[in-house]
Image (cartoon, rainbow, N blue to C red):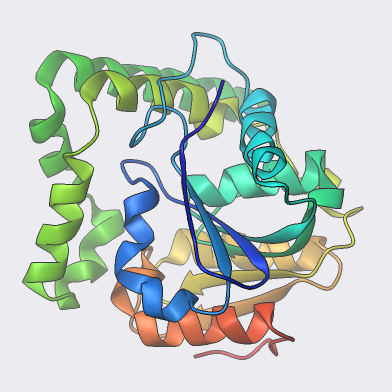
Length: 265
């Protein structure tokens, strides 16, 4: 499939991959933080202007479709930044196409579930959630999605910023999100834990101190991936880029433009 991408700016190329219910527009408000990069912000399958994935499309095929955007733009190797679901796709690209990755930033993302039984259970749960999106419609789902405990730390985010996020989510479609969720479920993502041990690419994992699940995953990831670094951001949960944008983009730019120590923010 062909994925839609927004491209802008000048400098070293940087791919941006959004989370579930997001789109390339997720990154629009951070344009000033992205100065100095040639940005390729991609709409993942079923999100934004990208078509819904075909039934049975694999995680590997989605990674290949993302890399095809680089081919279309004449980019051989670049930096990557992926948030949550987008981080999982970026990790799949890293393992499947390591030669296309110069450096990589993973925000609140998992290398996958280790056990087949866990993956089967999660895929079934996400299929049920996808059916609910189709049954109930987009707006009720978006309201429920925002009320998850995972996003409780967003209480410190300005109401106008949260409203902007909500309105952006509503630019998607119920059928697109449902199909995207089925294809991009962590239950259908291959476990990448063992493969990451063989990848020699600089990696920064960014997590919020108030997101215990992904904090533990980030700590495990940097133990597995050679040379990986962890940045834990205080007073932030799952959406570090939204909750602490100044700290987040400072860490990202420092890492992409030369290196970042493994300190806690």
